[in-house]
Amino acid sequence: MSADWAAEFPLLAADRVLRAALEEDVGTGDVTTLCSVPAGARTRACLVAKEPLRLAGLPGFVRTFELLGAGDLSWDLHAADGDDLAAGIRVLDVEGDARRLLTGERTALNLLQRLSGIATMTARWCRHLEGTAAQLVDTRKTTPGLRALEKYAVRVGGARNHRTGLFDGVLLKENHLRAAGGIGPAVAAARARAPHTLRVEVEVTTLAELDEALASGADAVLLDNMDLATLVKAVTRTGGRALLEASGGVTEERLRTIAETGVDLVSAGALTHSARAVDLSFLFEV
Image 1 (cartoon, rainbow, N blue to C red):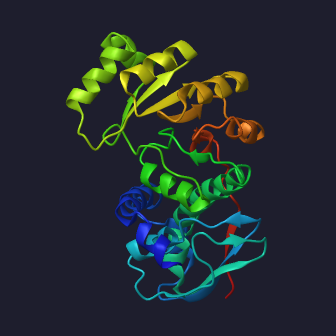
Image 2: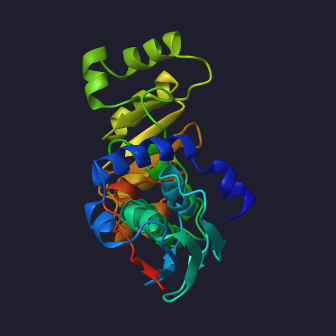
Image 3: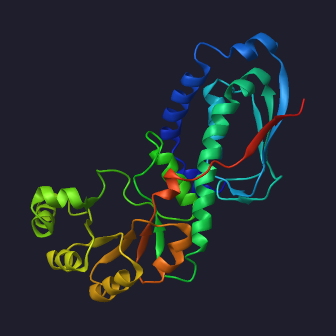
């Protein structure tokens, strides 16, 4: 694994998720393994990519077995997070306690397949933006409890993260604006009360609302469900005074044409809520 991704992997979040997942799966004990596999039995196993994919979450795969007390396992890693793998590529080999490997394999695979699926889909979508100035970003539409890990996978795939949660960015959406009395009052209140380090972004659905957001001094504007012609007008009207984010109805098929309107960001919840888990296989060889 490269030093950059090794440093970024959210190990504390992974530990919390993996402990809960192991408790859910193992419960009072892996009865099948305990009844059929002798204590002290040792084995060799390998992890293989069954389809083309971008790898994400390999540290979590290894960590699963460490949490089961598998300190006697010997790992030989052949790939790292961020690698693009062809079908049939051997990701790792491991040798050690057969019971621990059997007990942890499903939990380990579930997380790795999920994160690699997000990274794979994100990488594919990012390729559609090559040659444009737009950047692909994710949203808060993540699996409950998995946000730090899924957003890590988005970064491995080549996109950027939007705000992590409600605490690290001001995004005034439709219901905020209604509750606050409109765009101008909402932005003014945010400016007065939010930390100076936080950017203030406003969601708009019309060009008139865009004008109001710009006049209020918003740092960024989310252009919600605008058609391509309106996006082009919004970019021209803004003239670089604020960061522009296109959102809503973003699909892989529309991604390139949205980016070509000149917006700065294209946000897509699909990166985390609709990514398919990729196929990896963990096979015992002895």
